[in-house]
Length: 195
Image 1 (cartoon, rainbow, N blue to C red):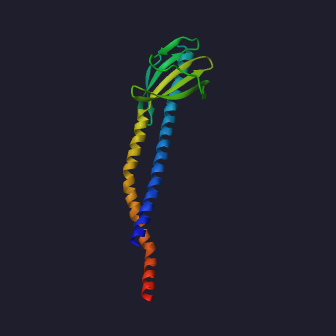
Image 2 (image 1 turned 120 degrees about the horizontal axis):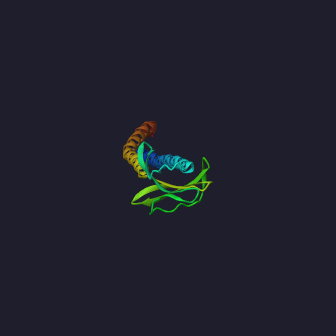
């Protein structure tokens, strides 16, 4: 009967462990998606600001590097390229891919654009290629290594807790199975004494 209790405990721990790992993966994906949306929001808001500066034509210099807050971490947001509605180049940083007008979605203020990801200098970047109906093109990038590091940190902490959780689940399952099999053991003993 001991082997039955051990098997019940091991199967319980295995099933719970699988459920915990699936939960961890789903949580990591969801956290990464939420943090990526936050980075996309920062890019689209900066594109609106830059578009306002370009369209107002007040001659104010455009920032090439801006610090954006992404999930309580400061990330470097870079202006890669800006082309005015008249076609003049206002900012052009060499070495970055040129903007592409694909898969556009609206951001308000007659601003459209699409996002892409790329690795540059061994760091991950989220790129926004945006444009307006008037012809202004805005190309921005934000480093997302902070997002990846946060998701990795959370995943590690969860993985450190899984063995402890499995041990507790296994012991609890063994104890419960002991309580559940006790009446069967008593019936078996009585039947053996009678027979």
